[in-house]
Image (cartoon, rainbow over all chains, first blue to last red):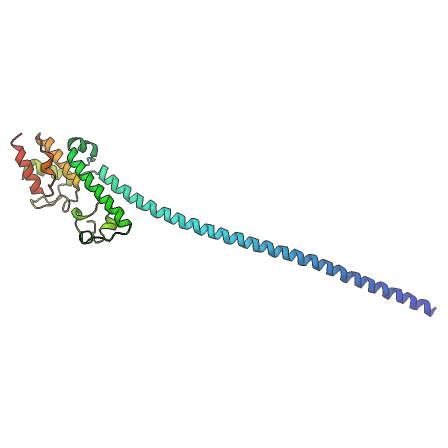
Length: 161
Length: 76
């Protein structure tokens, strides 16, 4: 009888040990799967971070491009305003200047003015490419002395009045 | 100063401006080279005269403009 009880206890203990062993194995297996999943998640996070960083760089590049475009647009708008003033200037009586009509009436005068402006434009390109300003350009303070095509860069001491 | 010259200058730049012999059309009145040509054309039309272009190339002051106009105002 005692032997039978010992045998039963032995089997119970054996089953308990087997169950424990199975449970530990199961935990190890799940732990491996979780470790793998964690590694995949880490990879995914790194990839996402790389994508986000790239997007931030793209946004920065676009912002810089936008800033440059706005800057160029402002310069072009200023140039356009000057051109409009040249061709569409309105006098004190509200009459709009008609360059075409002036050119018909006084072709030599208009050609002479345009030739002078052409020379001024050429000088603007020289200055933009690094040519130093002359004393005359630096000392220009009156409207008749300035380079009308690019006053901002050619005559830094000229203050419009 | 010739009345027609003064009238055109006032009409072009405004009657509030000062027009003296030494007044510079570009520096003092805020005009440009095209304004000088424009004024000459207006004066020609007003007085029914013709001023040779070469005579107006160097006009920058009111007195120079007046002199050029006076030379032709009576002769046409």
